[in-house]
Image (cartoon, rainbow, N blue to C red; front, side, top):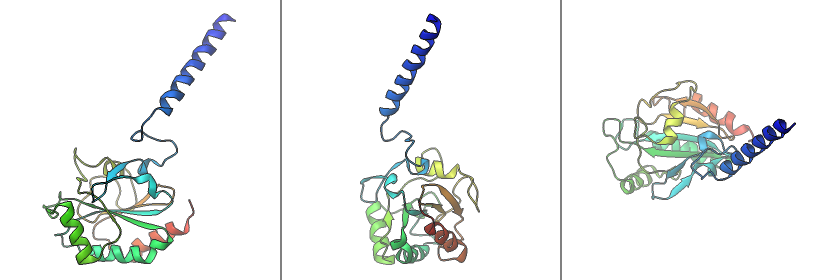
Length: 198
């Protein structure tokens, strides 16, 4: 009987310890109440910390962008998509990256000026990051690890690769650079995701 009481006491003690540790986790640690794909802090193009959990309940397009690429005109298509579906819950998160033949050499301030003056971008833009390699953003490390249709898992291949995250915060699709944001294939996934409720 005494042995049973000791075991129960140990179990109770371990449960209390685990609970205390869980309650003490900071914002950077995994949060059971938050989708894994949104449990990251990133930096806006203006240098402010942004908690991606603020986008939960929205349909999110995550795209790595560059200003000196043959696909740079996709900025216009992304902006048009945002203007069309933004009031229905679509958000677009643009992450500049200079890893592909140095096609984004500008500073964050210059990138912001370029996007707003050339393509009238009003969707959310973020500080320049690496999307591949050891120094890559933790957010992109997570996205790259997922086997999402139609492209699958693995390194980002080029500028303007696009991930779609649904209203629940669950990544549901990944499209290669050549798939235009205004293509029927891409827009069809966006529309279907917008029709779902979180």
